Length: 148
Image (cartoon, rainbow, N blue to C red; front, top):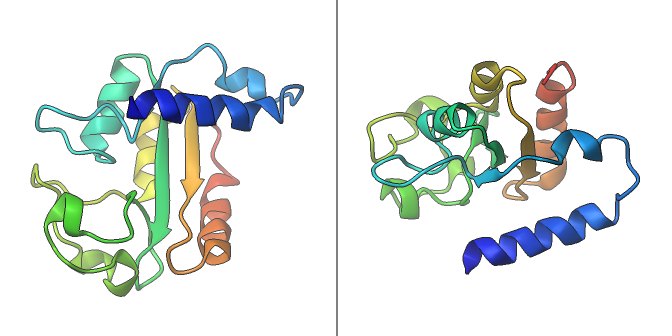
């Protein structure tokens, strides 16, 4: 049910841009929301994104800034639900972030882009935690040179 709602929101968002030339690059793909996760693979993890690419999916991911200005891929503003630590990402330096349940670390957007390397489309959601404009500026600085 949750994925059905996401799909409808996605279609509504795209409908407004129906004639945009970039839309064709996103069409014809199934999308893995936060990567292809489950069965011990955490959402928004490098493994989830690797599996999405391997299985032929595009992906949607969320980005936000850590206290020291690193652009990480994580959905929630808090680390509680995924990592079990009751802190906000924007209040923690990147090197001090807790590990994901599989023992891996929360990835940087730059790491995900390097791994995907243009093999699948990526939809990047800018989170507002800590200020959407700051997050968008950091994302633009990384994405402007991405060839994928």
